[in-house]
Image (cartoon, rainbow, N blue to C red; front, side, top):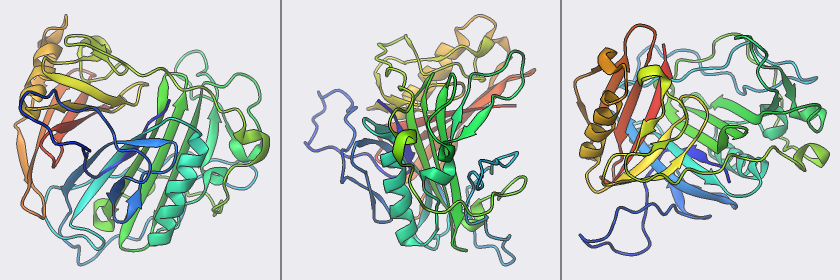
Length: 347
């Protein structure tokens, strides 16, 4: 089992009544995501979440490099790009809002990644295929040193592998797209797809790899990816996902009453999608349960923001953080009014 991330909306096949619990069913293959993209075979849509696109910049930054991945021979860039957004509503070049989509991968992670990359390429931004974007990540070295990685293009994993990581970024001058997959070890097989106007993207840190191409992984390298972590099935009050930097001691978040877990990324500071008939109450419940953890005196909340999307829909964003070396969590409600995305980021 794995997960894939994109932004858009969650859908239901059957009408719901007031007595129905919040849905946790995700849309299967062929379900619309956004911008003409659909869920690939072997995957399910967990949710699509939107933010207002930024105002057009009269002096826009240079476009992102056409690809971010491994260079021929397996050389890796020292750092990967980061993406940020503003909260000013304005129509984007390919759609009215910036968005992120999250999916669960039930089958071949390489196949899901390459299917989505090909769909994105057909719209303009030329994302690389898995052969140029994926690496085998070895267990972290003792201490805080970085984990060793091997390019997937060089063949099947050698030695002990913790997880598979793929990351690709591309821009056509109007739209910046980032596609990320992590599966195995503590990760549940996730792909995040972020679609933003180029004025939303911070660009690349460090040097980009020189054009790894659009080829998918083939042969022995694709035959035996590391197994994804089992999905959580928490009840109210139970922890879900992995450790996060916005709780005392890095404890996992706990599921509030009245909410259900749709999917979580796993790993440290991974994302989670929750379903609830009252997402704002669920956000308050997340914070209340975090405050109940020992040592929560350093937890502070930020003022709630209500963001108006281009179609007039209002979504709610709430941040909370741990001071003195902690991190920050963000909860963003979906445009459907029944789902929310929780993300975390360390200082």
